[in-house]
Amino acid sequence: MGKITGAKIAADAIIDKRIDHVFTLSGGHITPIYQYLENSKVDLFDTRHEQAAVFMAEAYGKMTRKPGIAMVTAGPGFTNSLTAVASANMANSPLLLISGCVGIETKNKLDLQDMQQATVIEPIVKEAYVCHNPERIAEYFDMAYRTAISGRPGPVYLELPVDILNAEAQPEKIKRPVTLNRSRPADIDSAEILIDMIAKSGKPIVIGGSGTWYSDAGQELQEFAEKTGIPAFTSISGRGTIPDDHPLCFESSLAIRPGASFFANTNSDLIILLGSRISLFYIFGDIFNKEASIVQVDIKAEEPGRNRSIDLAVTSDIKAFLKECIKIIDNRDLSGSFKTRFKDWVSTLKNEEGKSKSLARLNSESNNVPIHPMRLTKEIDDFMNRNDDIVVADGGDTTTWMGMSRTINRAGHYLDYGLYGSLAVGLPYANAAKLLNPDKRVCLISGDGSIGFNFMEFETSIRKGLPIVAVINNDLGWGMIRHSQEIRIGHAIENGTYIGRINYHKLVEDLGGFGLFVDKPEDIRPALEEAFASGKTSCINVMTDPTTVSPGSIALANIGGYKA
Image (cartoon, rainbow, N blue to C red; front, side, top):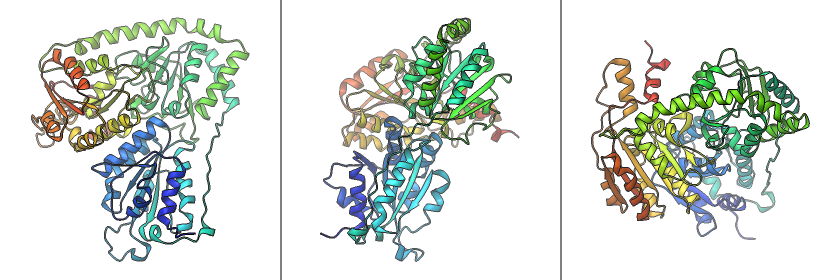
């Protein structure tokens, strides 16, 4: 038998898991693994920045519900990845970050790019593993991979020192375990209690969060809503698990979105949270009716009870729990009585939804010049197919406006930065979406500030043949910060809030893409048509009104950190 190095064991572990893409930027400390992945079935997808590579891996995890794999080199390669890892941690995205590091023999000798990496990343990952034995690399990889996807998903870190990668392993000591946890625990007793609570309620709602998506419970959520007649809302990665156009779906649960969410949150007497955490998005629970009973179902037992007392805390897989609830409803023949009971409540929410959306149309149908940003996001929503096309949002105000506009009928087809709020996700997310879905249209809408973080990922898109269309909501600067400062301190501080007019479309043209400039609302749709018809990576630079204030800016101006 020939020589087997730690690097070959690492590469074989990746190949054996049938991983199709490793998102990466090369470096000396991971070159040993590169050598064995070269010409394999694994695509070493190289980006222009480690942050972009890890954001792509995170998007992969969000869309496939399998761990996205990123690989970075030591020191600055590792530190460049931290923002994306923190974002994945907040979003519970399954992610495995493999990092090289200096050799064990030269640790703390001031070797090139030497630093304590595992201790830095430990607080923002599910687990941080460091392997010091070449024979155990495959074992560590399997452990890291299954940890990323087991229970509540999240990022996991695996560190492989370069001398361990180059070390020769003893074949008889190599361990290659393969384990996949398929368990779907369900709390049957709590399902019975919930059905009894529903029978006593008058104005219930159900909110499907990211846990609904990761447990693949979309079909069960829809059936649960249909059998009970309970109005359904969705949030974060749960958006689309029940289609927005379903008669019982009232779209996003966030109160800033035009619709019935604010009225429902403040008036419901029973709120059922399915894999949805009580966070800032719900004003830490204060937006919910104080008299309402709250049921929170989460795969992580420690989660229910954060920020608000929970009347029924359930530790369960969402899909399995909903199946039990549906079984009880059928066995007790409750569907008819439930739907009759909540018919008036559904009608009330439909009426509130209509009034709220009627007011929002003043902005979404505005013909003003400069263009109102909500007119821009509404044009994108109308143009992009709501069942099959993919929309990605990036930027402070921009993500707020797009989140207020996008109709989502299919889960996994709308991506934004979520609760961590990290700018720079846009181009990496869009590139990952197109890589995974080459036959689908992918549209990114990004603020002019956020597009600058990973701008050279336009070059990645062009080089890799991923014809995405990026729309820049160009309000000449950092709009959300500018407006929150105006609200809070009476004026915007120019340094840090003003960028000015940049011809982003021309820059993309110079990289080999297609560029368009738009400053009139009637030209938005023709520009979208032309960009997608070009078959090239495209940038549509849209000049929008810098004076419009989003609900997100208002919220930012009033968060605790700004209070005197």
